[in-house]
Every structure is written in C-alpha cells, then in structure tokens.
Length: 357
Image (cartoon, rainbow, N blue to C red; front, side, top):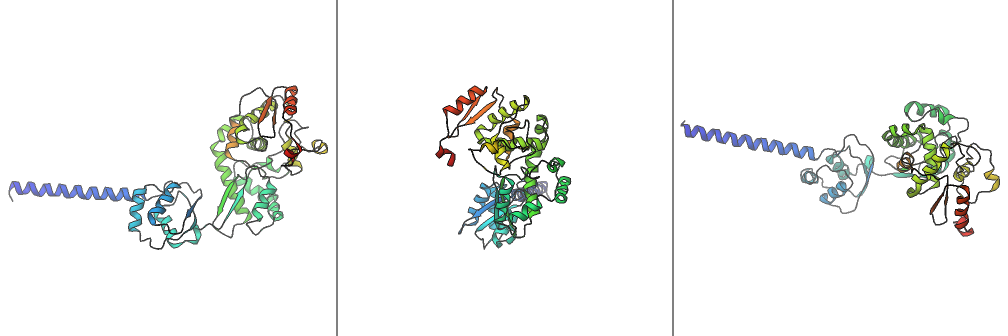
C-alpha cells in the first residue's frame, strides 16, 4: 500500500470513529433526556389528559407540569415507543418517574396511576372537620377516624416515626393530639383501599417536609415545634395571608410582655365553632384554650396550617403593636394602646348582617 493509500485509510478510520462517537454521544443525550426530572421527588402531580390528545400534545402537558426533562427527546421517544392507544384520564405521576414510564401508563390506562379520589385538608380546618372530609371519601365514619387519632398506642408509634411529634401532643390539656399536624393540602389517591392510618401518614409526611425545610429557623424562634405550630394555627385563624406576619408580630409582642394573647379564635376552638359574636359565657370559659383569660400559648394548635403561615410566624413583622382588629371588610387595624384599639373597634363596627355572613 502506498503512503497516500495508507493516509486515506487512516483518515477514513478517524472519520468512522468520530461518527461512532457522535452517535454514542447522541444516544447518551437521548437516554438522559427521557430520564426522571428528579429521582428523589415522589410528590404527587395530577395530570389531566383530555380526550383526543396526541403524543406530542401529551408531551406538552407533562412538560407544563414539570415532568419532562427534555421536550425534544421526549417527542423523539413518542415516535420510537409504540404508544398507539393513548387513553384520556386523570393520572397521578411524580418527578421520580421517567418519561417512558409515564407514557406507558397513559398508553395502557394503568389502573395504578389513575386518580380514584381526592381529599382536601383545608387550611384552617379543625381536626373534626378533617375527619368529616375524609369520611365523605373513605369507608369510615368521622367517629371511627377520630378514635384512631385518639388511640395512644397508635400515637406513640407516630411519635417514634416522626421527629416533630413529641409527648407534648399527649398532654392532659390537649384537646386533640394530632390537631395542627395534618398538613393542609389536597391529597390524591390512586387506591380505594386507603386506611385511616395510611392517609394520616400521607399528611404527616407532607408536614415532615415543610417542617424539616424550616427546622433551624423554628429552633431559632425558641419555640418547640408544638409551640410553633400552636402559634401558627392561631395566626392562620386570625388573619388572611397578607396580614399574617403583622398579626404574628402582635402576638410575639404580647408573649414577650407575658400578656394574654386575647385571641377569640382560641375561644371558638373550645366550642368547635367559627364565629365573631362570641357570648360572654363563652369568653368566660375556664378552658386552658381561652387566651382571653390565660397568658401564653394554649395547650396545642387549633387548626391545620400551610407553609406560608409558618413563614409568616418565622419572619413576623417587627412592630410595637399590642392590639389588632379586623374590620368587616377584612382590613386589619393595629394599635399600641387599649384606647387606640377601642377607637378602631368603634370606628369600624360590625353590623348584624356582617356577623351573620
């Protein structure tokens, strides 16, 4: 072979190697592009696939829900995957699933990923109200659910499992041990065989995530987690999201001065009511939850909460106010003295119609 011929062979080999390398790199990019977005994130994502949706449109839907790593390679996969019987339905996926896993589920209408039920644990709902909501979707009565949530053997098992649950929830003065601990969210169920215990732990897992993310900040407040959730729940019932940091600031000022919180929502909790026009007999209750009479925090939370309210308490507004009053239009008026507070109340009275709404 001549030197020129040898050179041509070497050049061809180099070109061939480059083509193979490029091809291998392309394959690796493709495989990476259809992997899970976040292999460690099992949080449920509900996806509605409308009737008549084509594969390309489904990629767009999944991408909008944060479930696609690379839309380009996902669409290539739809051409290679043989997805020829895509089924409209409501599916529950998560970011730990690969694109082919989700498409296979949609293509087969996989029963394990179909939405069966959803249960809302409302922000500000009392535990009894949560039990009522669950009883509408699962085959248990509110009484049966509350009985599980009062079972000390079960509660001790939960205390052993979750770092944020302590013996504080078993205190003699605590009305309902798990009050305030079931994270407020909508829970999507893919099975009809959900037990009370399973659903409870779904809520506690969500609370675990929210509290773990804020663990050091909560510790810096000087409160235990139980105390922190107690104050957060009161702030939740007293104010809308826009006013929670300001109201939390008032409560922090009162706590620092060893004053009673003077919160009517804690009195409402004693009677399991939500009302503005409390009776004098209710305001005079000797319950430890009556923060009109008892200084400091009540024995435990009074409702379920969300992360935004936690953040409002952690980052409470630094102010000099000791009083606040919510007018009938929702505006919150702050005051430094009792006289200023009484003027705010007089200037923005609630009518009978307002009270009955």
